[in-house]
Image 1 (cartoon, rainbow, N blue to C red):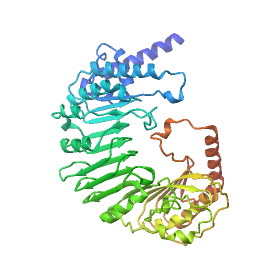
Image 2 (tube, helix red, strand yellow; image 1 turned 30 degrees about the vertical axis):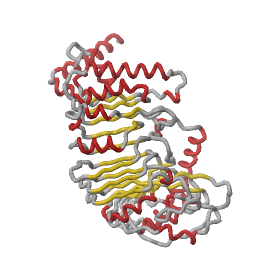
Image 3 (cartoon, rainbow, N blue to C red; image 1 turned 180 degrees about the vertical axis):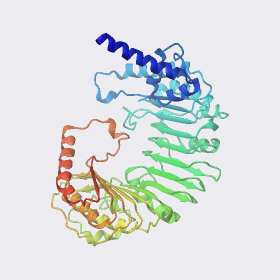
Image 4 (cartoon, helix red, strand yellow; image 1 turned 90 degrees about the horizontal axis):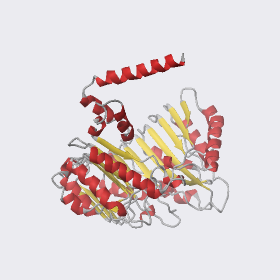
Length: 473
């Protein structure tokens, strides 16, 4: 009986391979391009025809699934050698003249520049369209003491006849300066997406020119940057800037003539630049993130307090009402706030922000709680009745089941008259980490999240009307 089942299984497996074998090579290669690279390479054992098919895929994403920082049994040196040999082997076997997507994702620094330069050179010669260099330390942290890989200017100049095919550039822990980025923007007429994360060489950024095709720009954790100028960028749709905490280094942020800009993610204190540019009213998606300083230490004025809840317990609410002034955002449909909130602050003060967004469809609040050393109890605050007629979805992340969380959730249940979905997520956002999902959680953190879920299911669910979908992640 067992032998019969094995024969049936083998016969069915062979039938599937035979059926797929009837497809043209072009279709099979397209299918293989959708698989992770190692899985695509594994199909070489299926038959003689399949042996080299995977080498014709135009997508080469070298993702590392090894987390060396959290696995002491792994040798960093040996795993690095394995990764480099893997990339070298695949690049040498690659048989087609074009590469659509090349992704290098491993903890590599300037000491491996010869290898990285070689891979980029091959990709550029094959007119790569999407180039990703993810060289974050341990795969999730930005580089600190070590020397980041420096993208050499001569490599770009020597391939100037080929870089024009680039559509997407994504650099993580790659040392690129403003001149290199300006050269790429002016030399790549198809470049629509540019992302730079953790470049300590970037001091001055200029995105200027009516001929620039850029639609999406992201600059994050570039702590040495001092000035940003974005002018006459007629196609720019989305802008992300998360810089130095508190913005101590950045002293100039100029933005002008960006008629299509509808999505912005930025530190709160730099919102004034958008206000002066007159482009706030056109925004549809807005994410505001905190600096890591309190207004008691640095008064940044415009909109600061909403995202800097690091104020002394004795600081009276009436004294900082002026910081909650928010300009009208009539076109805004999505608003996300990241708030560093201490346990004694009421979140109801954020309701003034909601009033400035009358047509908001989705609101996301990401909380990161801390308990101040001075102690004390929650400062009570009453929010006036203010119906939200268009708000459909509310998500509270970092929920801890504290009084401030709970009263804020009740505010939306009572005031969002057309609310369709309420999402409670106890997972907090984590600053200074590029990919929080790669870091194992501590036992205490898991316990805290479980307690918050239990609180939400017991106390929040009963307050939610039956016509509103309640989701606890």
